[in-house]
Amino acid sequence: MYEVRLARQAERSLRRVRRGDPSAYRRIVTAITALAANPRPEGARKLAGVEPPAWRLRVGGYRIVYDVRDAELVVLVLSAAPRGEVYRSVSRLTPKPRSSLNRRTRTGGAA
Image (cartoon, rainbow, N blue to C red; front, side, top):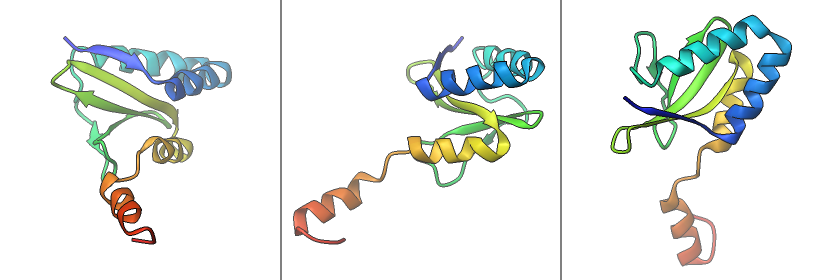
């Protein structure tokens, strides 16, 4: 059984959903709770181009984006928001690759 944790961004986005669409909020919370038993349910998809790897799960017009940490048995929910908004918030949470930052620092200029 995995432990489900919410990132701050996920807590904020869930509060917005709860105020705006209470029935969707209940469905999203049910789906998030189910991730403890199965972090990769049918319909979950791995997101391309996101580091560290993240997964998304559809719940109606909403998306839950989360990270599965198998070694720690943790599911970290990054965001839960309408489809058009959720990917923007995830791109802000995704760290830039360290290699390009290190190369720029070593040479003192652009990579």
